[in-house]
Length: 157
View (tube, rainbow, N blue to C red):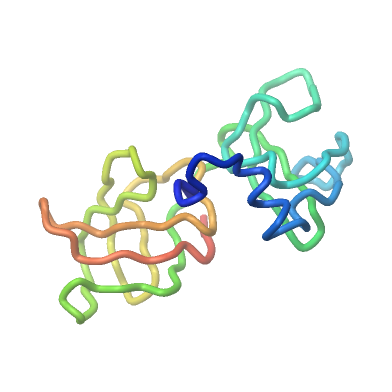
């Protein structure tokens, strides 16, 4: 999520004051749970990140998952970054009523909307999407009209 509200200050200072737990050291592991290294806080990682991971395994690896409860960073290959859809929380509709069916969904501030199917609090993309993360917001569109938005609570394959 963008943190433009921090203003001119350093976002790390803001996080140290408001969420010091994101600077707790933890493990970097692969999908099988094999330890690859250690890190000095989950605040330095984002889903899909490839550079600056602090470990080398001989082939490109990306942050596939961040587990805040254990301060664990899970690395995987690019193919393991895709999801079929998302479970949503805190969905808000511009009309006040929910919409089901075909929508365009945008989950990156500067990304392009992608076709999806809305079914309650579940959004299924028409093609797999890469590096979608819990905590991101998603907006739903019909043509140029904003239908609503929500917070990504979880992803599914």
